[in-house]
Image (cartoon, rainbow, N blue to C red; front, side, top):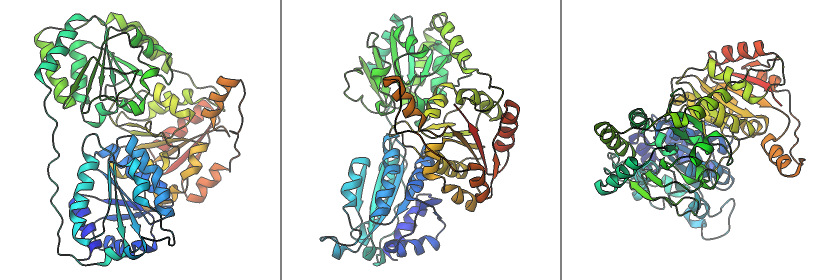
Length: 526
């Protein structure tokens, strides 16, 4: 078979169902190989959208999402989404086409050093400079992308290599290598520490969700009564309906969760990635710190663990739960009960009678009309901060927030990927700034027959930046926007559209949209 046929056969062997991308001249062989396969090629409207789709697919499923772009501008457009997946620890395999090998040693049309460009934002990347290495390279790309901690990998396929023949055949994906059980001596140190403290607290990070350790974490907090504070990407590891949940870390150093951490005598982080939340914002450094993760802690002045348990997160929590149950070890939950009450009461906000609303006032209505297992994809902006801190999340991987690279524009393409990956309803929440960066992917969604809701908060401003500027200087500059008629835009895509003007209309619009087909709900906010 041709090298392009082999690459696609390898994708089939890896279980890939969709490849998101933009066609290009140098990938002609690969495109026709995809046409003749069981893999669905999804043409998108911008390479960034393709990368975001692959990124969110990886977050939701744990299996690497695949995105495809041509050389030059195709590859540069893909880069931001690949970087987002890399810092968010989302498994992704990027494939870029390239000119023929005979012209890569010299300056030529659209040719740039894509390998060097992708090197800082991937776990591994290589050029397929021979058809006989395709099968090994594809297997390696998926294995490395999906191995904890996951991230992005990249394969470059020159157009002349794609057309060459090979006798190689796809390699069978092997079982993912499991992490070991915790070291008994290290675990004994954790147990001894637990015996000595009265006010421990858990900070649940991205890895608590990503490693499927939520069940074991929930059991541990039930047995011990230890409270849990989530990072933005750890939301849902413990249900926010649980009396042990203190919701989410604040964006700064204030707020109730930070006060609880400051008053604790032991902090246990579970699957915490420093890239998702600066420890200088929440860790006062007074209490002992236990780091439980699949990898050692990053060297960081504000994050110096006293004990590091580097092992399978779920198995470690299960071992601790079993020991705590046998030892009848639990704490007095009274020390954080009032904080829990204040956090819960802070979430409930009645919407104002008429538009413009506030994002925080919209979220209780949205939460009420979404089921526990429905998926909310949040874009980046001022609304993200409200969603992170004030949208109760009840199940893992049902509130997807990018907080590693934190790139604007992820929600609409992310909604496409989520709708293809899960059976539940999907809502893509975005601001007018992030929305217009990838609004064209609504056409992709309608072409695919997707049915999800775009919840669009509009204030004609890059609101988060304005807010921070005003906090620092008392004024803002360079953030004001003008917008098109978003309902007319939605109509041009042929989707349902709503612009609620009262609290009753807001609820009615969200109820109709979330349980309906493809739709846009524009909510004017202050």
